[in-house]
Length: 411
Image (cartoon, rainbow, N blue to C red; front, side, top):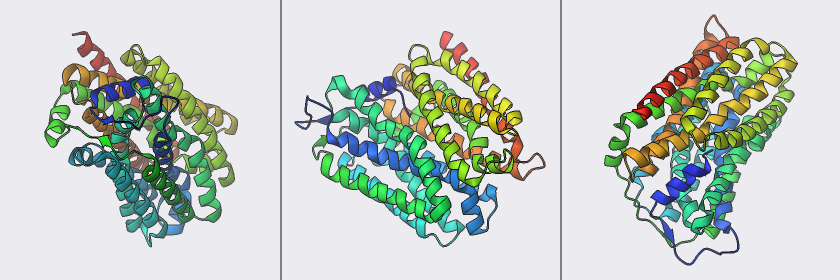
C-alpha cells in the first residue's frame, strides 16, 4: 500500500538492474508473480481479524488473547523489515524471494496444524518475518524488471496485491474459516503461497543484478535521524490508532452492533472496498504536500473514530460510519510512505530502501500496539465498545506530531 511517488524514489535509489529480460511491449510475467505473492501475504496478515471469535472458541482462549495473533505477527514484520533486509542484502534477489515464499508457506502450514495457542503464535511470528523482507525488496525487484518509464506502474501493480487481499482475500478467508474452520483458511493461504512460489520460480529472471549497499550501519543512521524518527512515530500512531478497534471488529459487529456471524464477512468486504478507495484518493491527495494532506486525514480519522463509538449501536449508521472509517484509515498510507522517502532523500541520501523498510516496521508496530491496547480495553470495565474512541486518542497524538513535523520542515 505504497504510493507511486515512493515507488519511483525507491527505484531511483536502487542499483538493481536487469539485463535482457524486459519486453518493451508490456509488463513482464515476473510482476504478476510478485503481485500474487503480495496478495497471499496481505491476506494472511489481516484475515485473522475476521476469525478472532472462531479461533478463540476453538482454542478456548479469550478474545484479547486471540488479538495477540495480530500483534505478534506485526512484531515479526517489524523485526523482519529493517533487520533481515539488511542481513540478506547480499543474497541474489531471486534466491531471496523464493526463500521468503518457502518461509511464508511453512508459517501458514504450521498455523493450519498448530495443536495449541502458543504454536499458532510461533507460526504467525515466522510468517511475519517473511512479510517484512518481501515488501522491503519487492519494490526494487519490480523496478528492475521493467523499463524506467514503467517502474511506477510496475510497483503500483505489485502493491495492489495488498489492496486486493483486503477487498477479497480477507472476507473470503473469513467465510472459509466460519464454515470449514480457521485451519482451512491458513491452509488456503499456504496454497496461495505455493502459487506465488512457483510463479516466482518460473517467471522471475535469474540475472537480477544486486548492488545493494544496505548494512546494519545504515539502520542506525536512519533510526538516529530526528526527522525520520518523528515520521515513524506519526506512522505508528496514525495508522495504529485504527487497529485498536479494527482488530476486534468482528466481535464488535456481533456483540455491539447485533450483526450475525455470516454478515461479518460481507461487512469486511464493504470495509475492504472503502480501503481501496481511500488508498487511491489518499495517494493523489498526498502527491504535492504529504504533510498537509496527512494533517487533514488524521483530523478526519480521529473524528470518525469518535463518531463510531456512538453509531456502533445502530446497524445502518454503523455501516455508514464504518465505510467512511475504512476509507480514512488507510488513506494515510501513501502519504506516510512518500514523506519518509522524501526525508531520506533530503537528509540521508542512499538510505531510501532502509528508511522505507523502517516505515514498514512502523506500520506494523502501530498494528501491534493498537491490537494490544485494544485487548486491554476489551477486558477493562470500559468494554469493547470503547475501542473506537481509545483509538482516536492515538490519532490525536499523530496530529500533534504532524504539527511538529510541519514546524521542523519550515525551519
